Each structure stands twice: as structure tokens, then as C-alpha cells.
Length: 477
Length: 161
Image (cartoon, rainbow over all chains, first blue to last red; front, side, top):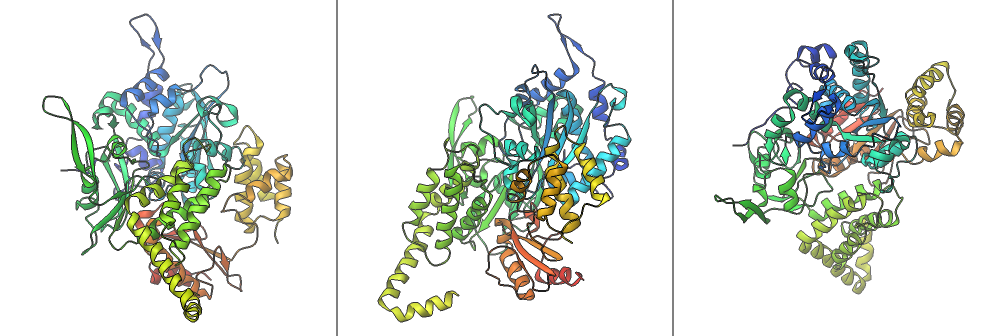
């Protein structure tokens, strides 16, 4: 049976656990930073020495840690891209711009256990020779910024930040930087532009890979809140032990944000891949099932950008049989293990690990219209296909949900969506705004067509009986 | 008063600038500081910030016009932001906004932020506030509220004096 497994959120919700440093220290806080700073250089068989920093970076690689922000990219690999020979300072930014619809996990960490993040960041900074780091927190988290600033102050006072940290000869300063309500700042190069004091227009890659040309054109690491917290636990238990948590290639834990039509929405930390989507929705330990008398209609498995799953949808997943031979196993959507690879194999993604559940009371066209309005609002406007496409899709869905639709709108939407991503835009927002449209229309096409056709039929009738038109128009206002 | 550079603000900005090796990086935080004190960012505030950070005013103006949280005009004394995005919509966000608009005599179907004629309340939809498990959610100025029933909304509004 699937269980909660609390690694990152081990203490956060304990009664009496407070965000101040004294409480954190009582729970063993900053011991892992001290441990990291005390690592001795390691002699290798070939006579070379492995520095403490290299050892931590190696351990993060061994741990298999993948980014918790959305892309699921290997953290160790990301760190290995950092240009360490440029002679320029290396910066680290914590991406705390949590704004992917459906996601509310980083909020729990920052509000309840801010020192865990600071310790994770400090270790990551040490491992990467970073001496100045920023926490980019979304502007609406006003209290979160206050809590983090207070925590930074406490950490400085206890010499976990500042000069010669814990006597280990290492200097690090850290600041909170607030966003101001723009989703695009979650895209790492947009975030960097925003931190530099500019409009958050994402940069084109190549050449502007943050690891080489990031903040102020210096090598920069951008990691999500949860990812950085994990680094602390990797140092605590060792990369190999961390890699035993979860499932192969999907190591560690994930904090799943569960919202929508379930009895117990909330955040649940699990070993990655050790619970299925169905368990997360229906198990009394997690979502507790749908509201009484309702049936499942659709699930968005990884934040609003992830492609939607339809209830009853089946996928062929590769598995190994008893003899180790690869076989294809038909798997129901609800039986998909909640991890990076299974969801990718099913054509979607675990993204920011946010599940949005919709029951049979949901108007699926309305749901997509809601999401498309979000993307139309949040496109930064830099690339034409995204700026215009996101708006067209939203406008088309607006007319479909306001009695002005056409039967052909379903195909029209897909045509627009197909022409936004695939290298036509600077950043992945193009993909993010297209995937919901492509998947919703593909999987629920009859509902889109029916809605548009009904509007057309009504309009045809109105043309035949003009008096009625006025009445209907009046009724609409 | 739309803007006046107080000693307190000067000190705050001087401190903020030390957080970055490049002055320009402080601009968003400086605008936050100004908005906290004056409620919005006037032309004078833009010019002052630009001078303070040794930038052409357009560098400040272009971020003021980009970020939704930054205000280019005075808003209500109490600004209510109702989350609009999917999980909150499934949890009754549209009904919540309509309830508030009706309560304040505002147009429940109008687009964008609306302020009551006495300048006391501004109501607007905003995009995902990252608390989807406790939908519907809203903010009243800097305070964040979860699971906002209509009764709870009335109570929150009732405390706004």
C-alpha cells in the first residue's frame, strides 16, 4: 500500500514546529551544512585529489536528484554544466516563483521551514563555489518574503551565513528578491532578466545558457526550492542512500499538490513512483476519493501545462517480466506510478507534481477556457506565435463558452496550438500554452464540437426569426 | 500625496542597492518599497527611482508597465485579489468574485480591477496564487485567505475599516 513518506516535510506540520532558527536547531538544523564544510579532500587511486566541493557535486549526481520545478532535469548534470573556468563569479538563484496553476508545495517549505531551504542553498552554494545567492520569491507571497528575510537575519547572526561560515573559511551572502505577479519569471532565463531589473523576457539558448551566461553574464545555477532542500538530505544520508528512495531514475521523494474535486485536497509527500495517480486521488491517506455521487472525468497530472488524462484512458508501458525481458503492459491512467518517467511514457509529465482532479460536473470546455485565459494573460509577448497564439486560443475558447462558438472551433484551436511550439518561440511557454489545448481537444473533441454546433444551430434559428434574436441578446446581457 | 522621498525610503533604497553588484537590479524591489508606502507608483516616483539608480526613466517605466502587481494609478484602500485560475474556479472563485462585486455595487462581469466610488475597495481577479488545495483563495492587501466562503468573505470585508 502506498504511504506518505516525509523527508522534506518531516517537521513542517508537527504541532509546535515554528519557522524560527531555535526550533530548527532543536531539530538538528544546520548539522548538514557543518558536515559539508568539514569534508576533507579525498585521495583518489590515480594520485589526484577530490575537493570537498567536487565530492558533494559527485554525491548529488549519484543521488539521481531531478529538478522539482517542472522539467525534471538531473540536478547533478545541471551543476556539471557550470563554467568554472571563466574567472567570473558563480551565482545561485533559488526559484521560489511558485506559480504553475495547481502547485503549492514550495509555499509549505518556505512558510513553515525556511531554514531548511537556507541550509540546502548554503550547501549547494558551497559545493559550487558560490558566494552570493538570491531567493526569487513570487511577489504575492508577501508573508513568505518576510519569513525568509527574518530567517536570513537569524542565520547571519549565528554565522550560518556571512564571512567565514562556522569557521570553515567559506563566505556566503544571500538575499530575498521579490517578483511582482508575472508567471514568466518562473522560466529561469526570464527570472534572471527580472532579477537584473528588466522585463522578464526569456533569453535565447544558445548562447544564454545560465550555467555559462546567466546573471550579469556570469555562470548561474537556478534551482527550485524543493530541489535545493533535497541537497541537504543528500549530504545527510549520502547520495547512494538517497538514490534508494523512490524508484530507479525517479529517486527521492516528491511533494504532490492535489487540488480540484477530491474530498481531501492538500499536499502529500511520497517516495517518487511509490504511489499511483489513482491512490493519490482515492486512498483515504491521500485525496480520499471524489465527492459523493461523482465520477472522475479528467486529471491534469503535473500542473496546468501538463497534458490532460481522460478517465479510463489506457497506456502501453514498458515493463520487465520475470525473466527480465521487456514487455508492454496495458496500464490504466489511474494505475500510472506517480513519477517522472511513467507520466512521460504516457505522453504527459509530472511537471511540478501538481494533480488537478475534475469530476463529471466539470464543463471541460470551460476548464480549458480558464487555463487558456491564464496563458493569454501570462505570455510575455516577446515571440509572436506565443503572444498571438495564446490570445487567439483564449478568444476562441471565450466565444465557445459564451454562446458564440462554431463546430469548427475544435479544429481551429488545434491548428493554432500546433503552430506555436517546436522551436518557434524563445522559451518553453509556447509548449506550455499549447499542450493543454492539444490534449483537451484531442481527448474531449465531441464536447467541443457539440458546444460549437449548438451555438451555430441557435444562431441559424435566430436569423430565421429576428425578433427572437433581440430577446436572446437581451438575455445575454 | 502621490510621492515624496522620505528619509526612511532613502535609507531603505540605499540598503536594497547593497544587495546587488549592479544597481539596476534593485529597481523592482525599490518599486515594491514605494508602492508599500504610497499605494501606487506615480510619474514622480518613476523619475526619482531612475535618478536614484542612475538609469534612464524608461528602464523603470518599462517594468512598471509589465508587472501586474505594480500599480500605475491609485487603487482602493483595501485591495481584494480573488484567484481566478482552474483549481479555484472549480472551487467557486467566480461565484466569490461575483458575491464581492454585488456587495460593493460593482459590475460582476467587467474585466480588470474595479474600485468603489468611495475609494475604499478594489476587487480584481488575479492568476493562480499557489494555494490550490484550499480553493477558493483571495488576498486582502497583503493578507492571504484560504477556503473563502461567502460568509468568510463578508467577515473579512467587515473588518476593513
